[in-house]
Amino acid sequence: MSSYALRLPESLKLAAKRIAAADDTTMNQFFVVAIAEKISAMETAKFFERRAALGTAGAAQTAWDKVGTNAGLPDDNWSQ
Image 1 (cartoon, rainbow, N blue to C red):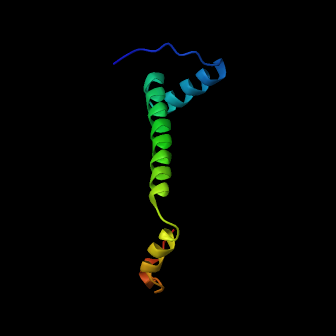
Image 2: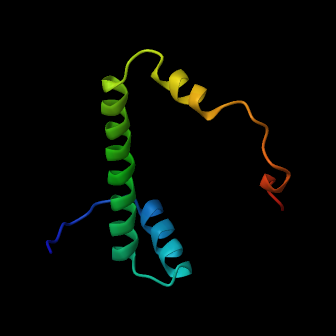
């Protein structure tokens, strides 16, 4: 584990402190989770960009064509 001194505006510090307290966690844990979520989102986007570059024109339509045109079953409805 390593340490990193973080400089942030007072408004962000207060917001992070408030949210961490509401979540019954520390600001450190809040920052670790926030950074992990951001890294995950960015790496996921890059993953799909690379996958899309490997695809061929019309591949998405070919996949949808395999789904078929059958209507959903009556029990497939979402209930709220």
